[in-house]
Figure 1 (tube, rainbow, N blue to C red):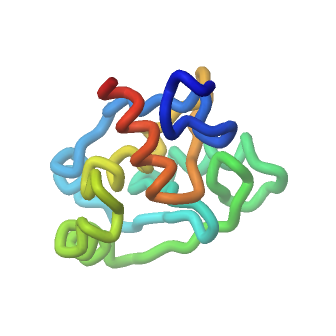
Figure 2: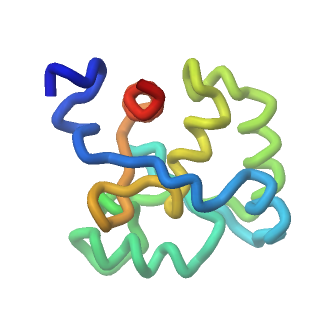
Length: 129
């Protein structure tokens, strides 16, 4: 792992696939956004909860690590806040925010999520090398 600067056990094997964009999420006009309480994971699609929950340790909707979720019924406000505060997501801004979407982050063949924006930044940096 020493050859890929910034890659840790947490980020090893994680890829960002860019399967959905912020514009595409907006175009879906979602009714709800679900997001991780202890990770950076989020989604706008209730169908992703079933996929993520199967990977978790319990039957409640969860992120791919089995973590508890929050939700908001104001998805456009959630997205607007992300855009207005892009610096919150680190050096990569909205690119890191979108990397955390359920459809964009994988470890092997499975959906995955990381615990910090710095970890997403490390994966994005490693991909650019």
